[in-house]
Length: 87
Image (cartoon, rainbow, N blue to C red; front, side, top):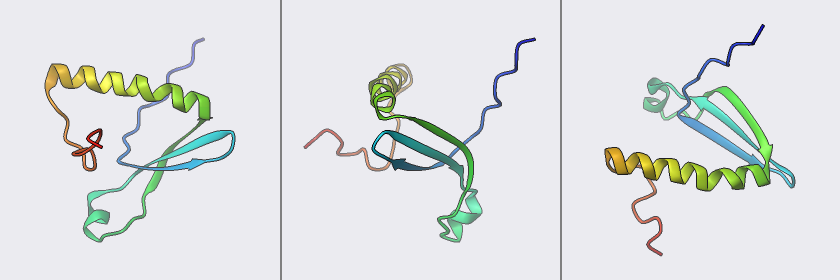
């Protein structure tokens, strides 16, 4: 009997830890009330670990997916990207 795919989770925070051989991404959810209290704490909802080579391979794939989305829908505003690539 085939297993069911994992249930999707929503994350609005991430902590990235890099070691000599791998990268660990702890995705978390920070509710709006914690932002109002200026708390930096959040609940980890998913952990993804991968080799550094795998992480590097994903960069252009993610960039291409976002570029295609923006071509169809319009630009996505994201803090910190206003001057990205202008250097």
